Length: 268
Ligand SMILES: Nc1ncnc2c1ncn2[C@@H]1O[C@H](COP(=O)(O)OP(=O)(O)OP(=O)(O)O)[C@@H](O)[C@H]1O
Ligand SMILES: [Mg+2]
Image 1 (cartoon, helix red, strand yellow):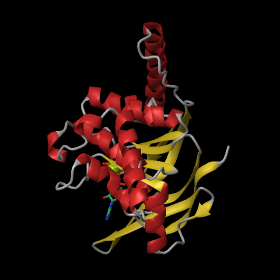
Image 2 (cartoon, protein in one colour):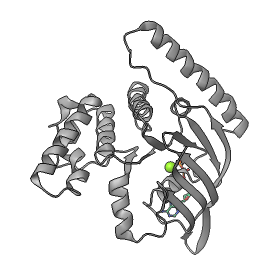
Image 3 (cartoon, protein in one colour):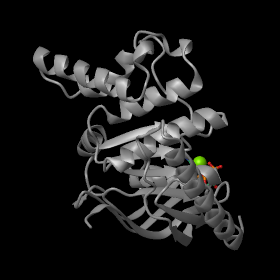
Image 4 (tube, helix red, strand yellow):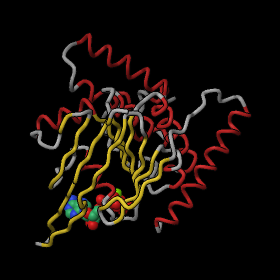
């Protein structure tokens, strides 16, 4: 399998009040195309810093990141900004959509930034409509971002992250601000996208979220302390078939038990 991401000896040091804080210490790992990898670990262990350093939102102090077999860590700001726009999608815990634009306008904005003419913009609008249909939020397209539920807003953020058809989606606690039902809905969308082949790297504190990922990396004090390979979770489309739902429920429960035991070993 080809690597979507290859991270080698990544280091990140912050200097605050003249004191050096080595947050990431030679972190090395790869994510294959089509994997959905969860990053877990105690608060302050460097999970967000890792996500930001890998995705070029923040500059690592040392080390190398390859996205789709291209080194991105030696790119200049402009090149990196383009790679982020064209090849990466981002979802955060708190939605960072613009208040004076509708949900649909927010979703299409990253694509309009790359577009050249009217024809292309019409195609983008169509793509946006298709994504909103897929994620079940067509009816809120014209709403203001304050006029939707937390779960709907997060699904809109996922649509926005997908509008330029990225190679990898990066998500920092995408369900962190949601209740259990909305969190399950959002995870279902991530699982469906992953089943279609999207590569996803997400940070989470939620064991139930991690249990739906294909692999978990556990970070302590800026190092990967352990790794659990669960394999991809296949989300069945026949939602009305009760036996299928029951099987799925059992599979998820079984994965949760494995994750729970493993996290105890990790000292979670
Ligand atoms: N911009 C920054 N400047 C200085 N120090 C920072 C900065 N961002 C993070 N840190 C420090 O880096 C360390 C790791 O922070 P990080 O946000 O990556 O942790 P985390 O694992 O995501 O935690 P949480 O689970 O609470 O979100 C912390 O000690 C934090 O104080
Ligand atoms: Mg964090």
